[in-house]
Image 1 (cartoon, rainbow, N blue to C red):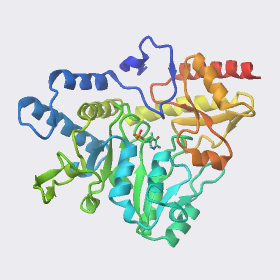
Image 2 (cartoon, rainbow, N blue to C red; image 1 turned 60 degrees about the vertical axis):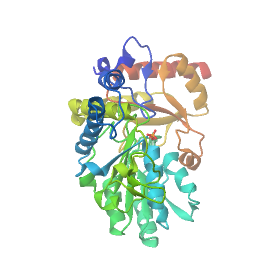
Image 3 (cartoon, rainbow, N blue to C red; image 1 turned 135 degrees about the vertical axis):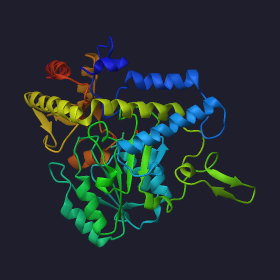
Image 4 (spheres, rainbow, N blue to C red; image 1 turned 30 degrees about the horizontal axis):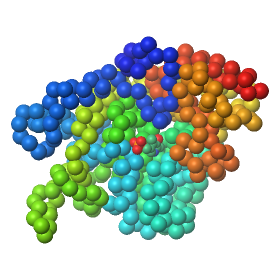
Length: 393
Ligand SMILES: *Cc1c(COP(=O)(O)O)cnc(C)c1O
């Protein structure tokens, strides 16, 4: 029903079920970027001619749209980045590096693991990992134990696991962390495609956002930084557009968020991201959640009918992604076969090797949906999986 708004789906045989890797882009998002390049291409925040002002205005419009979208209080709480990976690296090196302990969960994406290794942290040495149970539920008891032993730590946690679709109860995680005076960053890469976010209600300190996982362009993202932290943060890169005054001995920086946005930004990308957010608002999260819930439930039910299927978490507190294997069958073989049948899904470790190791597997088959996927997509997927299974028997 919504596929008509996405050029990718027009005259395309591919059944796209890899939305946790990236989402498709609506026509408005594509056109808005084209319009920038064709009609008013100019740098932002520098020159003062008409098109430069227009580019700056559209760029800053997205900041406002995003602020409203996640209910942040101030525009300066939004800094644009390349995506969640850069957002996490930025906060890790500009702020979290000063903390003795960083706490993550066992369900993290490599983007929220490797930056901590780069600071010389490892398990028990500046890095603590909260366990999950056999259904991949976050272990609050283990979390509280760690918080008690390491007060004033920095918690960096994913909202929704890209590998298993598991939703962390971040509101509860944040309030428990704050009780022990810990500061919290949430990896929201998978959030905005599926559910609305209210940063004030969550009382989150940092919230990382990815445009390309949210129907927007690649190479764009943002980090929400709660106002009280803005002054505590040093930029982790500097250069053009971040300064107030420079001579050869010293420079003074602009205010937030400009002091964090060094160099020419992905202007077309940011403008396109604004359109993506408008598009989501137009459809509404209520619709998105209702559609996805039905299709996701149908996916789960149909998958369960297949022989020897193995899941790692039940469908409760899970959204977007369903991860599974078939007993004694390689997920890679399934991936190769269904690709020949025009099914786009992902097989492998999904940038989350530690949890795969914990589960004693190399990877999974992951089907990840967005609101434009329908029952027909699931039927075609199941048909292809059945065919692949019969070939591998
Ligand atoms: C995709 C993803 C990332 C990386 O986001 P980019 O915007 O591509 O850098 C980080 N964490 C999770 C959970 C993801 O799904």
